[in-house]
Length: 513
Image (cartoon, rainbow, N blue to C red; front, side):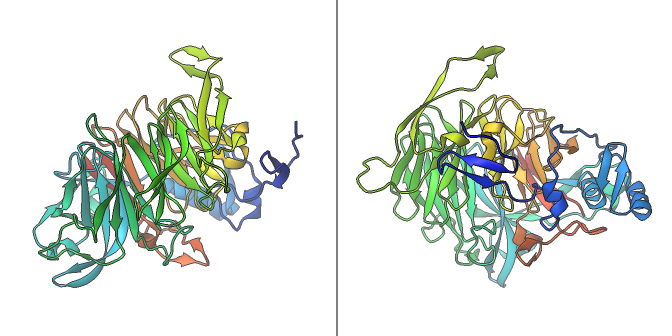
């Protein structure tokens, strides 16, 4: 049994120790003191009336008297961190009328070149997928008015309430426009939308998104499918526009199983899907699939991490398994690897503790990186700036942050207040990776500080579950400085920090203008 060494972790596959490096998620990468400070094990909760324990004026007064680090009732605080929390606790939320059942499963926002009869424009486009099977493209702004045969959707403020003066002074966001031929009915529910090039780690052209994949879930009569959306060329939304063209969107492959989730690997020609039979690598050009994991438990969530050699798979039975998806050596007949029979951890389900259950799968896995959550995995989200960390949520309301190097030691942070019992609900991480957002079955939206676990926003503005969330992409938000994301939260600056929320009731837009 390897000994525990302070500052090091043991990798069983490589049979050696490695130093634990890197800053804590949500802290400045340039701060050595922050990198050495451990994450608090006790997550804190806050209400919207006293989210950071001090008003903005008190924070400013404390900074003037004591500098950037000062004491509040909850202990020592950093001025910039507390001010960011204060900003994020005061959003304005807008609902777009007549967008019900449009993006209640998944959302992604990207920036594209759009060709119109008036010329070429650079604009934001929102991709949405719904449980009723509709996949749609919405233009965000005013470019859509130049397109042929469009429908305009107007925002109305739903939070804060009208009695607050802030609502009256807030500037309404842009309209969104949907082309009639930019919405198609898939064979079954849309289960996933993923972008290639959304994050700096996989971008090929300054963060520009050029490819997207869409998966359909499958039904009693048909299996799930995977589609490719080509965004390499400007989107021509003239009179002859139709998204159902091979040059724009086409079917890659269909399967005789349920397709729950998918993710791109390190290049857009390879993707991995999660199904009720396991995980498979899919060639996005030929449609050929090869199984990398076989299991009788559905894979409900996936996340490709590191250099694309491994993928996190979140199972219906609560397991999070690291699967090696690299090609096997010559002479090996099966890419799916060998069989593994692993014991469950002690899980509390329906007031009954299960001690003698076994989990079987066939894959090339990293056993030392396997962990379990109390219920079915709802979402996995790896961090890009801190690539050893990932967030995971399960269908009992648990949300945790893990260090992939130390998964056997348990989570490094927990986030309280989330409400879930059976719904697949997305986690959304902002571009600075300081905050994580998620909806709940109580119809409330919550935002936590990733580093401290503090609940900085919690409120209800919809009568249906906010099951889909996404933050505005980096390229839309602002420039990069020496490879680091520009800090949008300097004192007094709120810029274009915003997020989208999808419910059955409609599309919502949250901003901090």
